[in-house]
Every structure is written in structure tokens, then in C-alpha cells.
Image 1 (cartoon, one colour):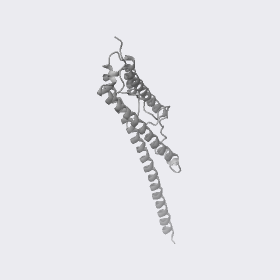
Image 2 (cartoon, one colour):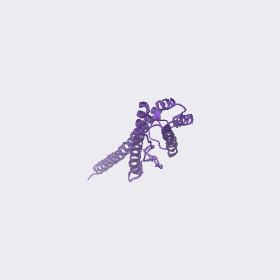
Image 3 (spheres, one colour):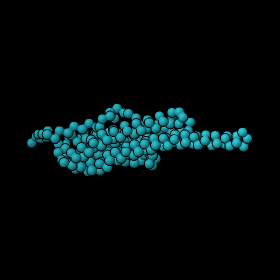
Image 4 (cartoon, one colour):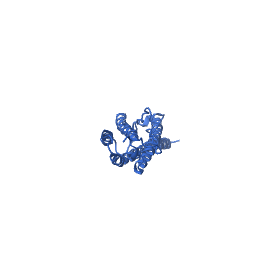
Length: 212
């Protein structure tokens, strides 16, 4: 075989090898991008349900504020907790990559959830307020939203687990850094996070008798 033919064979093998390597790299990249997009989509759903809760608060505050002598400190706490969430800086359109950033967001949301839970407990003292259709409707919506929050946080953690596992597996771990792929933080489980705030409304109970 002539030197020219040998060089052509070697060149063909090199070209084939480069094509295989390029396809292999592209396959890994596409898989990681798909999983990353999955975490971003799950994060968007988390934000949607948290926003749904925030959107209910103005109506809730207005409804509760109409009750005579309702504790103003409770309403103030909710308004301040809601405002604190807006001061949390998060990446636009993407799930957080900074654990501290996610932790700040999570604590702000937990503060709001705790304030809402306390408000609903305080509302037990106001039979007239509990009897209004507007308040009952808001209570049902809030309870449903808390359940959705729990579900979407769980789905987000599942998406993050799949993504974080993929970038640490061989051979993706060799290329993840080059692609700018990095591990993403989870939502931390907190005591009682698996349950929505407990709300005990007994609309059939009679209001306590008042002395003349």
C-alpha cells in the first residue's frame, strides 16, 4: 500500500473518531441541558404557586380588617412578611444555583406561611368573620395553595436530584464543568413542611353567649 493510501486511511480514521467524539459530547450536552431545563420548569411552578398565595393576601387582609377589633399586629406581620419576599433577589428565569440565595427565599416564604397560619388561628375568635362567604372562600383557596406548594417543592427537589446526579456521573462529570453545568440546591425539609398550616373552622358552632 502506498504512503498516500496509508495517509488517507489514517485521515479517515481520525475524521471518524472526531465525528464519534463530537456525537458523544453532543449527546451528553443535550441530556444535561434537558435535565437543567427540567429544574427550571419545576422552579417556575414553585414560583407560580407561591405567587398564587401572595395574590390572595390583599383580599384576605381586606376581609379580615373589616372585623371589629381584629388584632392589627397580626395583619401588619402578614403585610411585612409578604413585602420581604419581594426584596429577595433571584435569577430571572432559572432555578437558583446558590444555596444561600435559595435559603433566603425559603426563609422569607416560611415567614409568610407562619404569619398566615397565625392569622387563621386568631380568626377563630371572631365567629362573625368566620361566617362570611368571602372569608370561607379565601380559607379554602389558601389551604389548596399550601397543598400545591408542598407538591411543587417536592417535584422541584426530584428534578434537581436527577440533574445533580447526572452531572456527577461518568462520563458527564468530565464535561459538565466545560458546559457551565453546576449542582443546584434543594429545598430543605422543615418541621411541619409536609403539612399545610392547620386551620380549624367550625361553622356550625354557636357563638359564645354575651352577658347583658
